[in-house]
Length: 105
Length: 141
Picture (cartoon, each protein chain N blue to C red):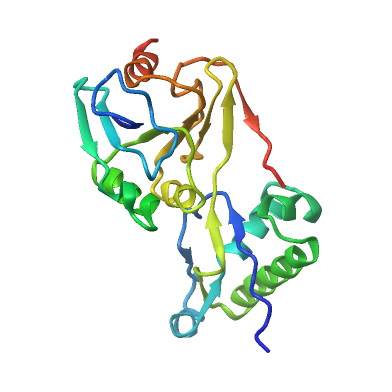
């Protein structure tokens, strides 16, 4: 299963980005292979429709869950209809922390 | 003057079926020709009222519309279903002014919010910290 995490930088020690559509990087973490992939968000500085573009990007990666701070009003129904689970978390956490949380059982 | 625009109706899940077909010979010809389109909001009103057994007042809050509007949608849903039944017409569920939204949960251990897109599967633990200590967030209205 693939999980997308929004990040402010391209390393595991970077904090997660609170904004979904305008985050700097998407971290695609695969729970089966434990692989991590960083995808830059080109829609970051778009005038409008950044959220929609971001949904398209992560949907093309076939992710099942998204971890971010907030989801916009346009993004929520889109992700809902694609059956992608949204997880919203407050405060500063690094990408590594999030991955550790997912992996701990 | 243009009519007042319709408020977006909130729907929890996409219906599992696309519609209904009548069964039996006498209605097959007529059923093929004429379709009755049941709107998504009408399907949802019926689901909330008759399946979930909520009152109109409770159901209208979930769909984020006024109580009289809800009653009108519900009445129209029943009228359409009755017509389809009596006249043996096909019914398809489509259209309407709606948006989809699922139920949200809050985990008490890692204080994250998460939603639940697949209604059939039962959630057992928080997707992030695997804690079982979570509760449903009541919809704001």
